[in-house]
Image (cartoon, rainbow, N blue to C red):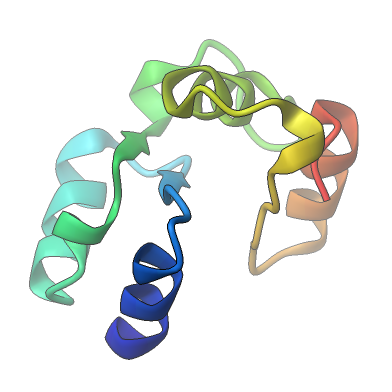
Length: 91
C-alpha cells in the first residue's frame, strides 16, 4: 500500500482520508501503518456532524483538499461507502 500511495502522490494527486473513526484512532492507525504523511487531509468521525451514508465528512475532505466532488474518487470497504460517494457526487 505505501508504494501505491507514493505513486499517486508522485503523479500529483492530493490524497485525503475520511473515516468515521475518531481523529485519535485514525491518526494512530495511519501512523502505525507508516502512511500518515502521504495524506494532505484527514477528516475523522468527530469532524463531521452526521456519519455513515451521510456525505458530511467526505464533503469536508473535498473542501479541505480544494477539489470538486466530480474530480474525487472515494474508496471504501463497505456498501455504505458507495452510498456516501454517490450522495457527495464522487466517483
